[in-house]
Length: 100
Image 1 (cartoon, rainbow, N blue to C red):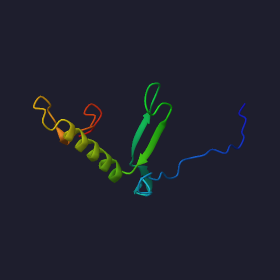
Image 2: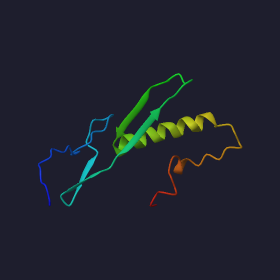
Image 3: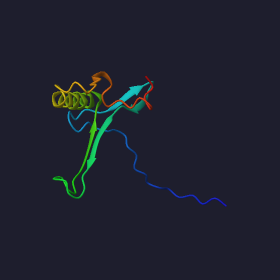
Image 4: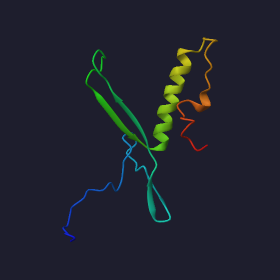
């Protein structure tokens, strides 16, 4: 026997970039797809940020800006270290999971 009931379910219909406040949804052939990045952190005991949890939803442009800023910071830290190989073009890219 099947028992039916109406249920109210919340569904994400849009996601907004926390930096530029633009939608991260793109429309292709009348379907919406989420194109976004996330920046997450949670800090534990002993950290200056102990107990703080961060989460930012970012559009592609703002995500790339964050990656470039972190890449440049890394480059400035190791600028004069000849033992470091600073392959900047793939900084942060998960090559095992990337399509390209």
